[in-house]
Amino acid sequence: MASGAGSCLALVVMILVVRASPAAATSFTVGDKSGWTLGVDYTTWASGNTFKVGDSLVFNYAKGQHTVAEVSAADYLACAAANPLGSDSSGASAMPLKTSGKHYFICTVTGHCAGGMKLEVTVSGSGGSSSSPSSPTPTPRTPTTPYTSPTPTTPYTTPTTPYTTTPTSPACTGTTPGATPVTPVTPGTMPYYYYNGAAGLAPVASWASFAMVCAAIVQLGLL
Image (cartoon, rainbow, N blue to C red; front, side, top):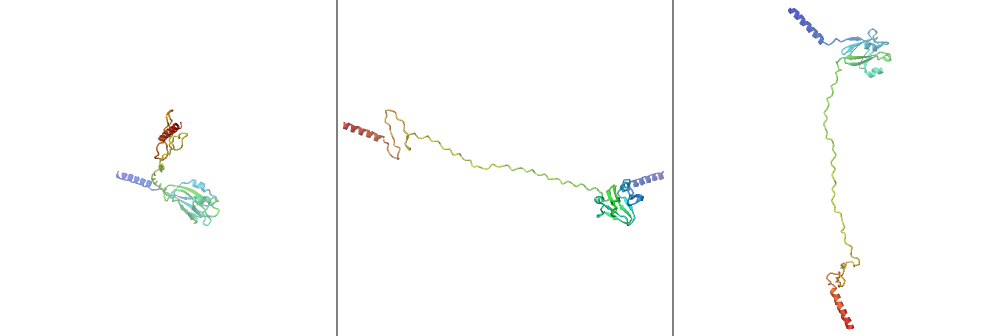
């Protein structure tokens, strides 16, 4: 009974270990039996396989006749190998797939890439340097006070009283400038005149009366 329980426990432990351990890496021979050479459809070959991080590609070819180099997407399209990510010409080249995403391989011998010796594979899984970049932390923006136009100020002006001319009554028509206006005389009365001349002169009314008396005496004497 105890031995049966121990065997069951050991089986459970083995299952857990197998499930916890990563899947074994796979080594793929490029082109299978055809190997790495001209006249093989490597696009169809790649579509029939599933690649993951940790797997490797083995390129078998005649040494001295072909090479293999991992290049960028731009160099893959242009069949250029001036800046390879890795290369080999041993005749049996193992190229590890260390990161997820697309990987590109070509033969660097002139004309061979354009002749079909080029391979593109898509690798799934995570590992190596394929970790997703961390999202940048946004920097909070400091609110700014909106600009307000300064309140316009009224220019100071000194109030002025408008100059007005006081109208004057027109002078009596027929009077001498500077003379006192003539007061109308009641009929039958002797007018009483004042001389509006230099200051300090006496009125001339008494002189007029005296002259009239003298004239009357002379007339009586003559008669």
